[in-house]
Length: 159
Image 1 (cartoon, rainbow, N blue to C red):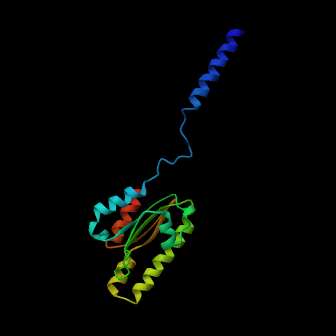
Image 2: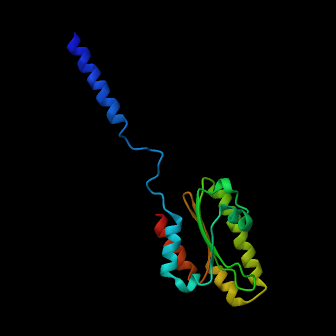
Image 3: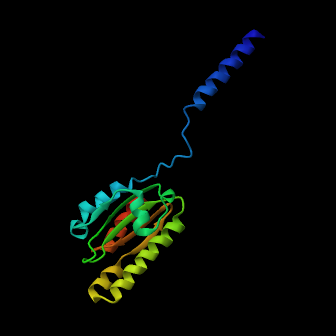
């Protein structure tokens, strides 16, 4: 009887040790570091990002896009801050509220289109080639030279 109890205790201890070694199912192995995606874009399309300024704080996304800081899990963004130049923007956001963030980036994109409709046909064409897309928890806005290629690169990196 004592041997049976000892064997059961050893089995329970062994099971409890292995239970601590399991993987955390809440962590997503497909997480992508958005700063790495933006760095790849900078490397691959230097002419498209020339002159862009990096946004470094979540509060910058609140200021420019009215995205609530609590909705931002990760982000990477570069924009032109000079209002005398064309609006070039690359904004990538990881969020638990992709619909809300997409709505905010869509508003900005529509404002860019509206602004360019009264300027030049070239700028409007450049803006129309960009857009706002979402994939899972990721939402991104691209208005730049080679927007379609940049958006494809982003989509490939997020898959």
